[in-house]
Structure formats: structure tokens, C-alpha cells
Figure 1 (spheres, helix red, strand yellow):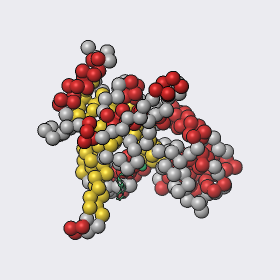
Figure 2: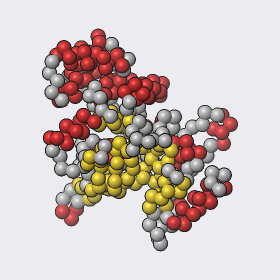
Figure 3: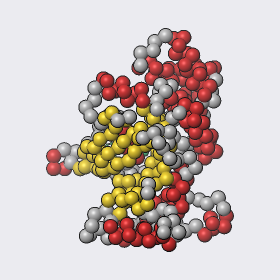
Length: 320
Ligand SMILES: Nc1ncnc2c1ncn2[C@@H]1O[C@H](COP(=O)(O)OP(=O)(O)O)[C@@H](O)[C@H]1O
Ligand SMILES: [Mg+2]
């Protein structure tokens, strides 16, 4: 599907947070050895419940956090090594992040013009006329007008503020945008508008998007591939349609069972499945690893689970 090769390569990434000191210090393995690629032009969904490590993954890629170990490459260049000015410039000109909370992430004392132009200034553009023109053109792309440029964040609704967050991220023409739950804080009625806007901008600007969400319903319609995270690990990764039609990992199934069905008949039959790792797996003899059950469909499993998953796919007519 993507002939362009990986734009982003994440290999054995770990981020461990340590709190406290000495013998009383505790470690949180927020991201625990994950690997995936994101291809040019795709929307890659990263899904999992709160606290599973999604934000940490995004922040480690863009280097708001330093990886504890592992390698991340962007267009073949390592971006996980020691920070230098050159690497910082490379990151800011190629990758941008849209944050979850449009209220917290916009400085209340800055005008929209100042907020959106910041990335350009960092890159050395100083000419006020050029800054204004670039910001006006960006504002029109996100559905605001130039009159909005002199206003402050509190004068806008939640959806408009997230649009401003999107403008700020896209002003420097990044290739990869990490959107960290960009609609979770918004009213349901506004969520679709912001998602549609992102999709339109993706096509118009040729973006690649890593879209982080805590439930599968949001990413379903526009992610090409989806990775499901659970306690710092990727437990399943597949093309979006495949994941929804043939979920294999019990955690993915439990997440899917939480998605309301538009059809009232299937909605009435919907049963919530809960995931209980101790009951669902026996890893006493064999550690799980991410294995390819079907081309492009990876599941964290043991060898015996792999066999069982393949039999399930056979029974469903997916493989012969
Ligand atoms: N700066 C930090 N310091 C210490 N622990 C953190 C920090 N950021 C996140 N964590 C912990 O790492 C884990 C993953 O958090 P996070 O990446 O924010 O998850 P998610 O975005 O999926 O909700 C959680 O247990 C969280 O408490
Ligand atoms: Mg988060």
C-alpha cells in the first residue's frame, strides 16, 4: 500500500521514568520496547487506555522526552541520539505535535498571531509582513479569518482553540504531525469537524499523521493502520479494516467491545468483554513477542497462541 518506504522508524523504544531516590526509587516503564514504522502519507493510529504510554511515545519521538533506549529514525536519520542544535532544527522543521488540551497548550497572554507565528520565528523569519501573510493564510486553511489574528485564546470556543493549535503545528510545513488525542477534550459534536479538518489538511499539505486516541471509535474511519498499546507495549498492529474485522489479541477485543454500534440490532447484542491478562494468557513457559500472524497483522503472543490465532483466521475464512 505504501511504496514510499518508512518516514519514521521506531525500534525497541523504551522510556523509563524514575521517581524518588536510592532504595526508595521506583521505575515506571511508560514505553516498554516498542517497534513500528510509519509510512509517508499514511495516518497511523496509536490506541490504548489512559496511562498506557501513548503520549510518552509521541513525546519521545519529538524529543520532549529523551528515550531511555532504542532508536528512532526520520527519513533514515537517527533522531534519538544526543541532542545538538542541528538535530533540534531537523526535528522542528520535520515533526510537529498537536496537544490534547487546547486550553492548556495555548498561552493565554499571546494573540493568535503570536501563537501561530512562533514556529516561523524560531526558524529565523523576522519580517512582520511575511509573518502576517503566512499566519493569515494558515488561519484561512483552518477556518478562521485574519480578524481573529489579534484576538486572545479565551475569546474562542474549544473547537476553535484546537484549530489554532493545528495552525501553530502546521505553520512550519512539517511532514509528520503527531496528534495527541486532539479531540478528546472537545464536545462530541465538534470532534468530527476537527477530524475532518485534519483529514482535509492532510490531503492538501501531504501530511503523514500519527493519531493518538484512547478508544478505537475515533481512529476507525481514517487510520490506515492501527497499533494497540497496553501497559507500555504494542499488543496488536494491523491495517485498520483488518483490525476491526479480525481482532485477535484479547485486549483489542475488549477495546472493540466498548465501541458503540451504529446499527441498533448489533448494538443491542453488543457485550462488553473485559481483559484479564492472568486468565487470558499462560506465559509461564514462554514469553510473548510481537509475531506476524498474517502478512501485515502483528500480535503479541506466544508460539501456541500464534497457532491458535491462525486457526481462528482459518475458521473465519480469512486464510486457507
Ligand atoms: N513525566 C513523567 N514522569 C513520571 N511518570 C510519567 C511521566 N509522564 C507519564 N508518566 C507515567 O507513564 C505512564 C504512561 O503515561 P502516558 O504516556 O501519559 O500515557 P497515555 O498518554 O497513554 O495516557 C503512566 O503510568 C504515567 O503515570
Ligand atoms: Mg496521553
